[in-house]
Image (cartoon, rainbow, N blue to C red):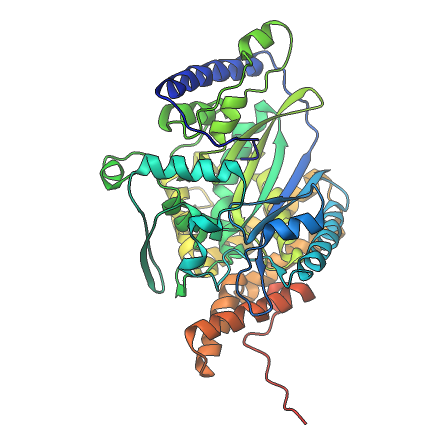
Length: 505
């Protein structure tokens, strides 16, 4: 939600005015689609990575303002809490050695940011949830000093009308309450953007939904929260509960959560924007002066500011994006599934797997989602979050009899999805050297049944066996993780456990 939002109070007429403006924006979007005003295919992709700040002790540092001042680059921005940053990489055209170029850009950017963070005794840690975060770190006083975060927090708290309940039952059971949305800041992710034409949007979005479970299975990296070992990828349940505007009565009535997987396959980008208006009340009813229909009548391109802002407060794991570049509107699918980390090489491998797989799935003559119930795709996503690389999925059977069956995630990725991803990268024109390097990393994770979450959990338990208390074991695991992250070798090669102490003398 990168809008310039100024905190203030809303009166009773603001929401009605905003709702009317949203309907005009939706009509404007429909006209743009009907009139085929959108950009032609450019095969553009983009990457955003949310980051944590931590000290040499592994504990979070509430210093993003000071660090950003030192970085002094528009590529880096604030995120929700004071221990968060975000780095944005300019769009790239898919093809050639794009993944190697992306990796080099990210290494340069993060090394620079880490040096600047070091000036205030902090460092960059790229991880789904920082294991050392405590409940006292995730309070409203640690919100970033930006009006839009304060306003968003106030509106979600007001809509809910009571404390937020965090209740995640995994390896261990966490149950606690929060008075603000700040626990959501624990979730740091990688966002993968893909610009698509309106005609291809539905197939790409549906394909991204199908791919989400496999992405999480091989990429899970968030097993800890508040000292508890939970799901292998704990971000989705945490994000949903920390932003949940529904008290229990509305949940019981089946009201949709603002963070959700969705409930159906789509036929157009319009479906998703229309659902946003139908299901979700405005959180930030801020109107500008543009009349989108008048702009269209005059031959212009409307900003659709209200529609864009409202879309930014509905947290789909695959989100539609409307934007304008060089005066021409375009649509993107924003994939928000993956946690940050463990290394830049791993992030790029996850990206290569995603872009290749989505291309291949979207172009299948008999789409996979025509054979997989949406409820099964949602259940697969849930299973991947809970069990990571050990998950099992419901998947369409190959062969003449059809139907679905249960399959081990690792087997599915190795036997079926990696070959599809390879073909998809070929279709994008990616060089074989890039394709083989980065998909090879996914294959090795599957072969060894290792991802960031399994490494964190195994190293934490090894530290407990060595006699460390829980907090000390989590801090030691975080320090070791940060050390190996900066070395940069992919996570499947990381040795489990803490390095042995070197004797003195």
